[in-house]
Amino acid sequence: MSEVFVHRRRVGTLSRGEPTHRFAYEVGVPESLAVSLLMPVAGSSYPAERLTVLHPVFDMNLPEGALREALNQLFAKALPVFDDLALLEIVGRSLIGRLRFGASAEHLDEVPSQNLRELLSSRGTDGLFADLLRRYARYSGVAGVQPKLLIRDDGTLGTSKFSRVPVGDRLTARGTTHIVKSFDAVRHPGLVSNEFLCLKAARRAGLPVPPVEIASGGHLLIVERFDLKPDGSYLAFEDGCALDGRLSREKYVGSYEQLASTLTGTLRGPDGTATQLAQFFRALVLSVAVRNGDAHRKNFGVVYDDATGWVSLAPTFDIVTTAAYLPNDTLALMLDGTKRWPDAKRLVRFARQRCLLTEKAAREIVAEVIEAVAQVSHDLKDMTELDPRAGEIADRMRTAWAQGIASLKV
Image 1 (spheres, rainbow, N blue to C red):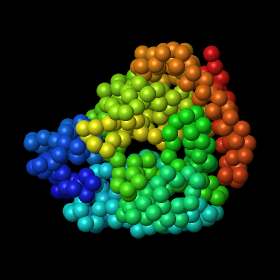
Image 2 (image 1 turned 90 degrees about the horizontal axis):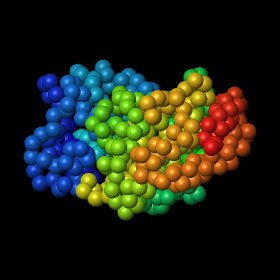
Image 3 (image 1 turned 180 degrees about the horizontal axis):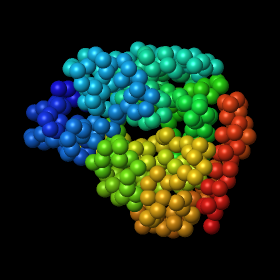
Image 4 (image 1 turned 30 degrees about the vertical axis):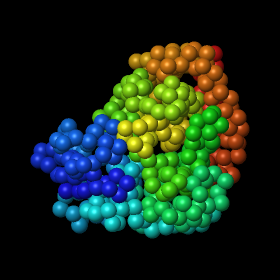
């Protein structure tokens, strides 16, 4: 059994069940502190819909890949059962979003700090990320196959030109402030510099992107948490799987039309649904332009501060040119009945039918993305300055971006 907290207030209990796990709210929890938009405060408990699995909003942040492997090595022998619920109980004190899990509020978001400026200036060694894994794996409730950790800044990034959270406020935070990403140099060489330039293209294309910096030598990417508030607390976050009642393992299932429909029914607030859907469309066009075949459900999501108030599309994150490693890669989800890369005509039709955009507005977005990617593509020739080993990947990215741009020109 695990107590569930929102903003350090206990809101309910998640209990191991036979055959299904159950979540029940405490009496008197305000509607604003609901654990999920799909699970409003109620008197009756919420059973998980499938045997032995967690509710989607709890499953959403379960570690994957190298992080899950590290946690398995650290804790599997010490626990009678090492399943998803046990894993959530290990990392639940520190997650993306505002949900926390633990026996009490006392140790939630109590994370040791790290000199991130020192990490950025390091040239990288084989043991550096392994050491970070040992120290921070238990504080890293974050999904994704790419090696990544949640880490707390000790204030050294306070003068960063990218930071939007004042260092004084950041230091008062008990929890993590940044996501630190690494990569498998054999399977995905140059992945960090790849993502750094893709995020640069996203920002140039007009998308909101969290503050990001790359380490000397290109071995680490440090991204400020997009859910971090100036007072050190966190916004709620739900990804495109959780919003549709799906588990993370279903992130490649379905279509962008379905995802757009889910967002249309979820987004609300000061910017208006149409503005938010335009941002979603812009992000999709960018993924087509840079040939990002991993724009799956979990790479889109929403943030909110009050479950009864505004709900906005989350900033753009986790975008890479996957075609640099998989030349025949395709879209992550179906679009217009296929996963083939779409041309401008198909995208504009999608924008008109699903994103509340006029044809003129959709074509303007496509043109702006093309221009942004073309501008940042000039930086690919200098990619080896970010990572000396990324020369071949830079060439492949240049080819992929050229193909993406060409496919979008009317």
